[in-house]
Length: 119
Image (cartoon, rainbow, N blue to C red; front, side, top):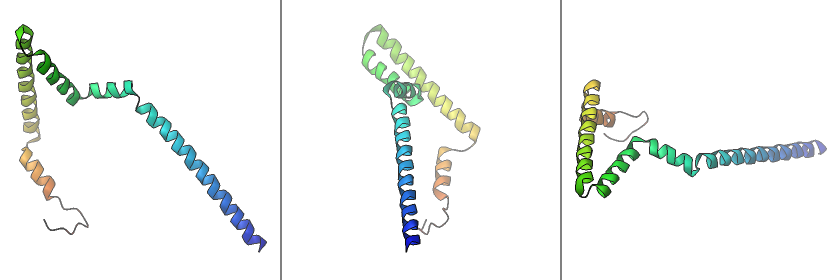
């Protein structure tokens, strides 16, 4: 009888210790998450992304490019950037040798093991 009580006490101590370790891990992960989610760091990451830069440029053209000499230059720059992006995407596709439709069809035709749904 006392042996089973000792085992229960040890098991309880083990569970309490595991819970403490898990609380410490959660606290550490929350601290890391808070550090990652600070506004200046997020702003730098967003401003460094190509999509955000494109959106900022488009917004600038929309706001400042309504009329006048600056507007004319901004519209011309926007057209040049659009043409350059289009040319770059076409060159990338030419290098890979696959059309976007072929890539999409190949992705949809992949068979997933264990997937019994009809194609």
